[in-house]
Length: 380
Image 1 (cartoon, rainbow, N blue to C red):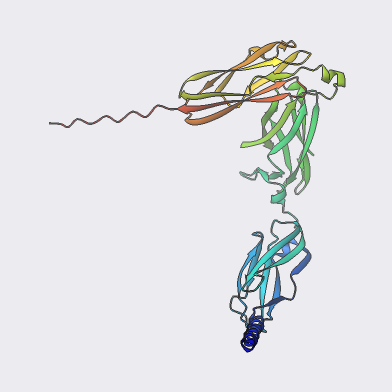
Image 2 (cartoon, rainbow, N blue to C red):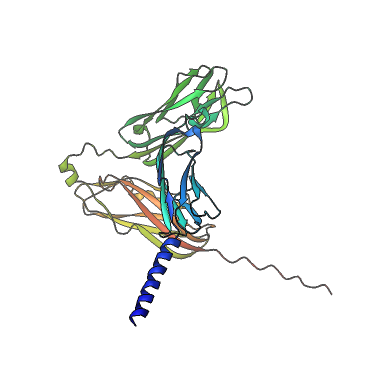
């Protein structure tokens, strides 16, 4: 019995030793690589992670998965015999990816553990952008008119207080071989736009200077204007320069006491669901509200998100005393809409904590089924 136990013990030990000898093992010369700092225009960067089969069985790299599409992996596809070497190649594409990066490659093999994580990192110095990339809005250049390029076709003033006159600038460049005089037409009273200098020499850069005088614009909230451009006295057909602003109340001068005694716009519900309605019908909507503050509440401006919603302007501009209630009435025309529809009404008030409120109208519009085609009567 003792002899049998000894034989079994030796057998188990031998199998364990054989298993260790037969185990597939992998060794990487490095598991991390730093490309350092390089220019974007240098293009793709490549590094080979060298692997060695230090086991007794063939090593198989089954798959390599990169953490993002900017890194392309490649690897030795055939089994690597014991003692031989293979590689996992990391290819990093810096195009349009300036700045520091830190990416991983997960290497799946027939070893234990099955996954080894490799790391590549570095820093991409952004390439110098071309004139076309920096100045994206071309004007002119056809029918003998000299060409210029603006940074954009949109001059955004963002928030402009109703008591404010705000200035914004944008770069412009003359990309032609001739001098270019730049002028603007169709300017509203609240807007001034000019080029500085007014005439650009060939290759010269300048500025578009815009001044927005909110005192001269009766509107509130988002406002936009389309301005015509003239190049050397020639109006540019179908070319517009867009100017936008968000006109807001100026509450900066209010004291703590003013804020305590301010009006409060308290609406019963900001949403009205009309449910199922027929197409080509007019549907009345009413939003009830109360001045829950201490001073008069004034509705500065009320506008709808589209022409399908008509606002009844009765409450606009009227002072509503503390504790009093009123309503905003509108009519939604379902027209040719079909299915779920959502529209917005924007309300601007002198409530410093709630100066812009969005009211929503929703409906499920049902259009009548198309009439059946008449059945032809056979001729006898």
